[in-house]
Amino acid sequence: MTKFIFCADDFTGASDTLATLARSGLSARLYLNAPSSSVSENDPGHGSKSLDAFGVATSLRALGVEDGVATISPLAENIKSPDCNLYHFKVCSTFDSSPNTGNIAAIADRYALAVGADWKAIIGGQPSLKRFCLLGNLFAGAGNGKIHRIDRHPVMAEHPVTPMDEADLRCHLSKQGWGNIGLIDFTMIRKGRAALVAEIRRRIADGETETLFDVAEETDLLTIGEALREITADMPVLCVGASSVAQAIFPSFANIPKTRARRRDGPVFAFAGSRSSLTAEQVAHAKNYVKHSVRPTDLLSPKAAADLRAECLSVLQSGQNLLVSLSDDRDHDIASHDLAHASAEFISTISNDVALGFLLIAGGDTSSLAVQKLGIDSLSFAADFDAGAPIICAHSTRTRLDHLPMLLKGGQMGKPALFDNIAALPVSASSS
Image 1 (cartoon, rainbow, N blue to C red):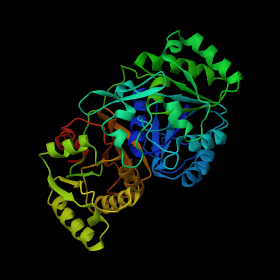
Image 2: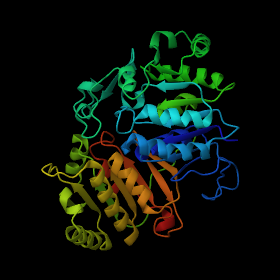
Image 3: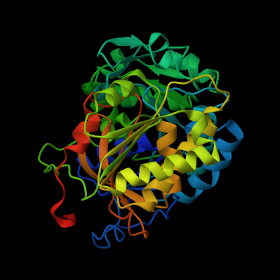
Image 4: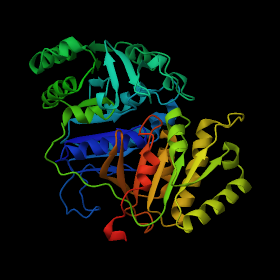
């Protein structure tokens, strides 16, 4: 029986949720298109047992309201299951969104309607990634480890598409359509499971339809998870939040053996589409790659893009690792979504034309669009690697892509040496 069904608004966060479920001992799979809710583990070759959990990764965070609602409507209808009461709309841990782009409230409302969830639980923090919610206000760690209120965060406050100019998540989401969000703060959560369940039931009886939960530390998540499991025994619920939702409901088991991270025989192809300062530091730190810095305008020029593809294929076919990064040339009028599409097309072409040992993509929108263009069917968890950035495995009918190890990372994720750490991975014995 399927215990948990999720839809993610991008691929980087979706892979983190997939990893979280796997760490908890659940059989889980991430799809690119909505599967039947009766899906099994047949495609990864693990027999015919039904999956404990599955999700669908999308590019919802980059879509306008009409396109977002049009995307979630058939998807939610297809994934709902009469046997499952736990649904999750996975959003970025920084909740970056706006009324016009990646509108969380509009998409969640349609998702909830499809699965019959009259109440939505908004989980406000993910301590494992240094995301904290206190009295409804969101805080996030920067690359140097310093914690900032989200509207003063050096990166998220200046995000090029969805800048976070409001720290109170109730105010932030009210602009997107939720005008009466309730708050259960950390003082109520720390009264324990029984008191929290009673409070939730009282609010639902009073007609509250969206409730935000503080999360200041891991124990808050455990209490919230205990309460949600009890509530969902009687009714379907849509949870909105980062991978902390899965952490809350399915705590990790320490006795699950860890799989060692590996790559296939072949070169590493890395593409850095993120403009974050952390990604820039990671690119600068990388020593074990041939590097190409690409102007955004070159990716949209047919001749320049063709020349670049030929040069990159030559490097990879010679067996050398390749790191392509977008230059910080902002003197152009290319829309962010158009640039992400061009980057995704470039990544897909390269990945299908040469046998790679590993594919690494930095950038949320770029990752989402690139994976959709690759021509793969689903993704499974392969191994832990870096906080918020696990290694996943592609499954596809295309020989070159099937079982290709991948890492999709957001701009704020990973250690400075992430690229070189990938290049240093041992080669799987089955591929050497």
